Length: 172
Image (cartoon, rainbow, N blue to C red; front, side):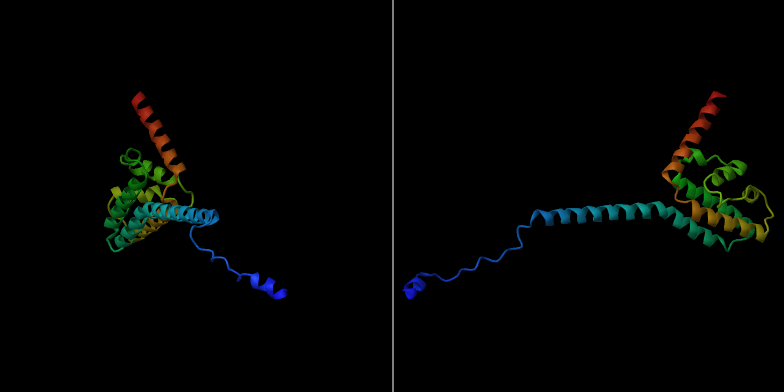
């Protein structure tokens, strides 16, 4: 009797192996999150590179200006500062600034990275000593390194200040 019951049994059928495809919704979620993180990372890296491009060029130009005569060095430093700030701030806020106004504009961003107005005025004078040129170089390099790139808040402050200045000049 036992043999007849055993004869009626069929072989054990193993289930088909579980395939990789289609993916479960959890895997799709992980893939989506990873792709979003990659996209944000690429975006922020590109922004960082774009924002620091002018700063990097300015530092290179400053190091190239090291080998100039003191008078040429001072003029070159001032030109580099103007060029690099024009890369970050609106032209109308910077282009017309000279002397004390230019020093005040540069020094409004960071108390630790100040540029002496006396050294800025060397651009318009002759007879610059090597020591003055070197001091101006160090201050300009520190300013570019610490202040740039300008933050969104600093840019808004610049825009608001230039708008107020334009309103006052139009009213006079």
